[in-house]
Image (tube, rainbow, N blue to C red; front, side, top):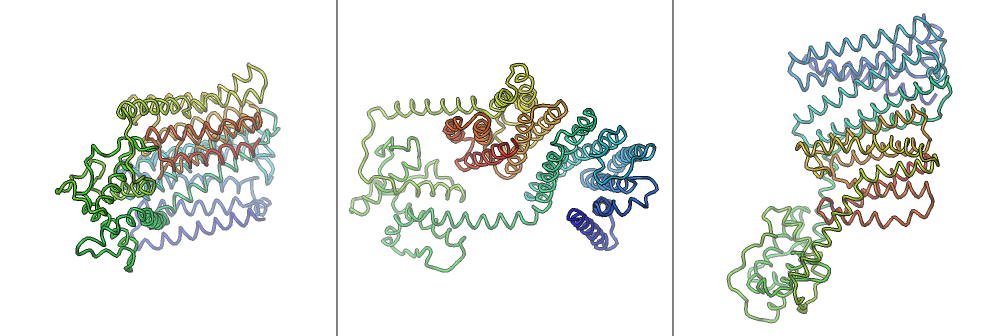
Length: 590
């Protein structure tokens, strides 16, 4: 009964939305508006007719069993066609949109006619659990495959057309929302593929269920609904959330600059005609932050004649090798010391800004935050300079960089995903041939094939390298990886793979979806996500001894920061996502 109420709620919402949108056109009913109204109405009617209560009430009145189910599925397919029509009119000129829409109409009509023929020529009695009850009946299998095939075909078109529209839009949050909707369409495509594969497997087993069809359907369906709901509403709540986050960042920056401002404030008080009061005046956080930055820059300008020459500053600062912010902090401390002691200025002409002091406000504020963070740790006494600082620094830098690049390449996600299925397959099968067969199947579809496409794209200049460092270029590789992984999952189900391998593949697909959503607006570290998930999966599979590999995740995170591909926050969030989604889902499934 609860599911019926939910379906009725969706149905009423869809019909009301369609009626409201149709009425608010004020007589200007463009093809795009008509297709939008048709899609909303189709979804609403399909949901209402698909409700278990509706199917049970209509069953005695049907001229042919399961006619109501056929009508509901046909309306859902019609709604998908209307969405394609809306997108066609958005991204294509009218002279191209209409022929494309007619071709899709032919595919829709052929699909509905085929489904009607399969149900009416040799009808089966009504049953609430239609697919499970008649899973060994050929015409029911054909009906499911045609319906899922059209759904999958529609999702591919959605992804392709939405991608075109994203390129045309100049609204960042709309682009981000549509990208998330694309991920929802990819999840719906996964539902269609897994549903088809499960139906074929159950049919081949004479109607005996594998026990995972319902779980797969629920996971993909829930993921699709959640992603589409998030993406569709993101243009509304996204800017509000961004403004709130911006204000929080400004408050954080304001307090982060406090050590530097407090240190320099005596200079402002002692300077002639100083009017700095910083946070003592009422005003918005923007005003107070700007005032604080201006005060700091004024104080630094006043102290410029007191700064020692660059050659007198220490070349090495303990724990801050090659960090210009640390050198800047030491210079500020030296200048303050000379000013307070009444020494004469070193130079009378203020020094020119260094390359580490850029002109744009956001970068300048980030630079001042770095200096403020280091300033409390600076020793006021002059540190000793190493005997050969240049040679020591370069050798240390070379060793650290080489180690970071080595860790980045050796423990790249595609390498871990290549080895992890083999290790899980060994525990699940305990025979060499089965281990290689099942493990290499997962490795091929989840690692080797996608990596081949990524390397090809890197060599042809489609993205910036095999690690795809540019976040904006990650969508196509992500979709390729997701499609290949879903294909592998379907093959595992169809071929009767051990459950541990299926659970591993489901885990990897869900991890892809979660990290893909985050990547839409933030560059999460895939290296640490995969590494953390792998450690948890191996610990669950083989025992607690594998938790000893956890420090390796930290080393991989350090390497990603050291090669300047990620920030500390990005590798941390990647680790959390991999642990909770990758390892957590696997632990629940097995």
